[in-house]
Image (tube, rainbow, N blue to C red; front, side, top):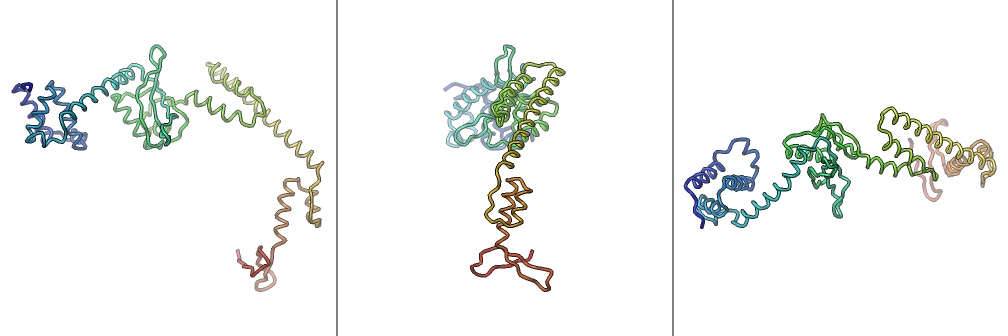
Length: 325
């Protein structure tokens, strides 16, 4: 077994004592469980350069033997290996964010497994215009509290550095969390999500008209000057607004033609229905005729006097229940 110097043993003894008695209030708040305390001790001893077996032997000696430790030598070894692997991965993310974290894109459109839990990724661009990952998180839901916790944790992981610009999709809860956690950041919407929503909504009800999507894409990608963009967007809006209005007018004219050409079918040729068929359009007349036919099943019951009545609509079989409203 590797020998340990008296200075190293004294240092470990001091760490073990601090682990239980001499920790400041700030450290106590950070160490919320026994596992956190053990991790603190293992990492501190490892940082001091004490070997794996020697550190474990001394830790066992402090508690009266290895059987009194809640972890084994293999557990200590696995923990330190996992820690170093995390530091290697996270270290690159922290370095990338320090250099390229002024502009961040956060996307939660990814879904995982059958439960479709949101998987959020913080990404950006480096000086080669290549995508770099600043962080990721598997979330339970997409509520304000979840986003707030995630953004605060992201800041802690990156030493409190705030992004200057952050792009996301159009999510109300996320937007509120960004306003609270990143108050100085400019919040914009990703062009990808805008394009997807445009293709989804503008393609509905266009009656084969495809130029609206090309015009919209031109406004998004071809005009960088603000004045030029506003001018072209206004032209596009007026052009397609007039097209939609004209389409509705054509539909109205077609309905007017059909109402004059096709007479409504009347089963009960009562004076009221005959008069209504001449005044109302076919669709309004059908609604009126239904109400009229329903009123034929109404029965009335006189109350005290002759000026008030109760009306009930139901079957003539059995007693009718009259309820005053």
